[in-house]
Length: 216
Image 1 (cartoon, rainbow, N blue to C red):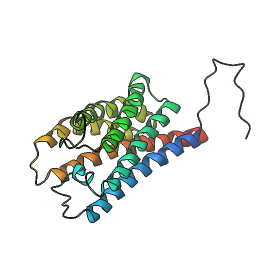
Image 2: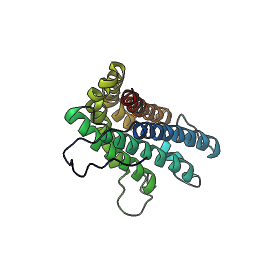
Image 3: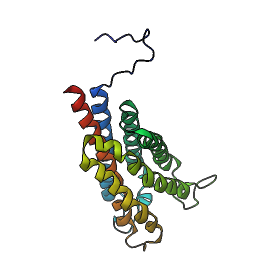
């Protein structure tokens, strides 16, 4: 299919493409699925691992770290895909714009968590930044879902409420992780991760809804 030439109309808004939105939605969903699978595989492969008391960081260190790292990179790609799709189809003012930049930052932070292979235990050369990265994610997931909720609401009121609910729950619950007893902090951390999945899934569904509207 030949590309349209807009060289003589530089100020005309460019068209949205439904296949791009669907593609970004698929990447977002696949990233979550692959991350979940990597966690499940690591839970069985890593010796003496308890998914209730041991955190994702425990799985991400040691001989089998590549399993969890692959999942972390997949989730990073999911967040970046959400940013790309949101930039392609801008659905809502400054909040949506804030979400685009926030998703890019979240994707990069998640990537760094896997790439640095340091988990706050001072066993890595140089400055240990894992804790700072985690706090960065707390800030981003406290802001981005709410900021993008109005845009998601263009497609569905339910998606808007879902995004807002993620912020309302994440904001107070995420910092509690640092004070959780060691015997249950692994389970709690997985619950927080699932909460971010809810937001990513809502954005993916927003893209699919927009794609459907474009094709209508």
